[in-house]
Image (cartoon, rainbow, N blue to C red; front, side):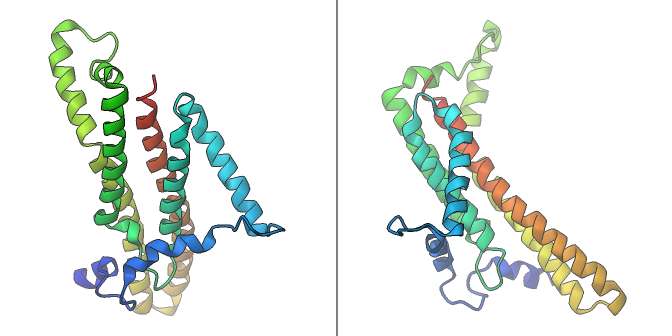
Length: 222
């Protein structure tokens, strides 16, 4: 039972041979800039991007060049989370191999940029303002550890939330097969409500990952 439940996260047990190709499916939904007249989906996509930019831009007043990268990361994660809810599409964002790679790449890039261009600001953040003198060595240790584990917390947060939702959907689906006619109605309603919730979680997790990336970037500019 447990092996069958977790097999949805194993790329070798699904029907599609090369499941990691699902990472590239989000490119299909990108609007073409060469279209003369924008379709309804393109207009909705444009206003959605405009709203996301208005959310992140105030946090990056002095380093707005990072905004394009953050929006790209947001769209990449969001499309992978949403597409992973469709049948027979592999959910790549539920794997640590993808989330940890993305988080490590983002974190290492920010660290390299920060230590080269603004190392004084990074050292200042190790000791919060108003810290007593006898606590300064302890605070440096705590802040250093919290900075090092940032990519781990970013990746685990995204991966764990996607796994939890898919497991609940799989549990309800397997229960629906062996349930009675009376219970099937409740299970179908629960499955429908859970799918709506997971769609919201797909957007929220992409937003949380990108927002934390934005906050980490803003530390390099003050």
